[in-house]
Length: 222
Image 1 (cartoon, rainbow, N blue to C red):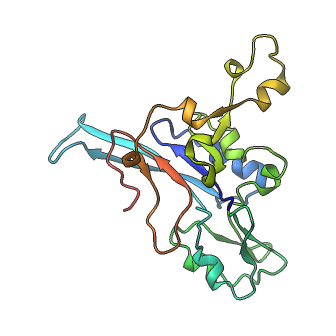
Image 2 (cartoon, helix red, strand yellow):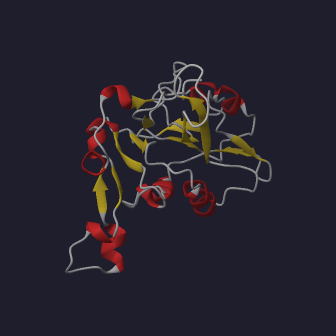
């Protein structure tokens, strides 16, 4: 079955926060709330007892993981939180009573109460965009070309990200051609192995988002 998700190459993420800003803009996220955050992991010593400059760090974008077995859906008393056929976890605001059970159940703390509307909100994976064949806004605006969108059933290599002027033929450099250009994760980023593929901690919810990290110690489970 289809399960849309985002894969992020953490070796390419530069912590520019373009994903956060783009998400807040296109989804009208209230001041003080975020659908996607970027955490700084580190600096951590490269080996026991190491000091600067023998340290390493990376940035970790964090948002709803659109889990396969979402705890937020299981505890929702009105079925406002639900899973679509494309695998994404969504909130029906007309059913949400603002009880925040889902926010308390989420292992990652990525839901919040929109106090002006009295409903819970979170990342929708830009449902309104992907339904029209567009990329989620955080993927489309990624400054480091680190984020890719796709169907987990089709494999990570098939995930796509925004192209650039070099991704289209010399005969057509129009805005439309550049805007619609796509690059595949498997053809665009540096080679990685199974040991480089990570998920956030699994509390029985089976987080769907994928993080690729090479030559660094994964700290996302802490």
